[in-house]
Length: 221
Image (tube, rainbow, N blue to C red; front, side, top):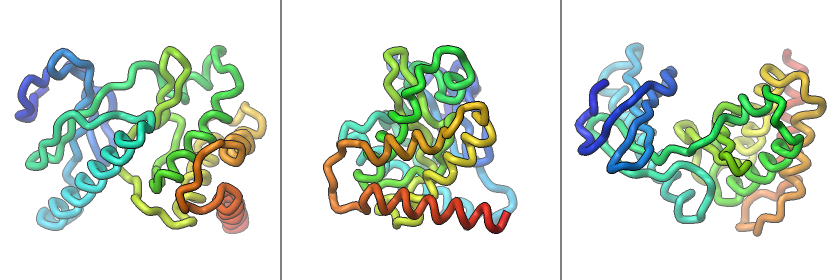
């Protein structure tokens, strides 16, 4: 595995190879870290692909910076290599919420906590864009952290926030169908979250829009 030119980066093993990016685990300056490298999209013209990749990378950097400044539980940006469309992030130790919910270790409160965390994210002025249980890490202390903000938006519209819950609903239905009323637990945590309102949409408006989106999906399905 190449070090892609980042000084002191020592790659160890691949964590994930998806359509948007490759994620590699390793260490940087003695700290556990992950390297996220955006992939070229072969179906696009090279110039267009480079421009879009730069735009998405810049957006993700801004989002990570905003999250870090508010103390939101998410990876911290350690190093940026714009030329190679790569970023080095702090690694969150633990396991994915997907794996936890598949095990016998789940307490039953994780989905309530996730709802509150999503509400907090929206109040910061960010929508995630890809809310699945694989993009939620659970530390050994039980704290939840969101990861992978490659499709996130700053200053999202009500529809984008409702779509966050809809994407999660589809994930829960596909991967965790044995958990009764899973998305309702998320919505309960979302509505009950004690988060200062910073001028964003109210929790009731977001959940209401989510219900409308879910209704549209069922109707057209």
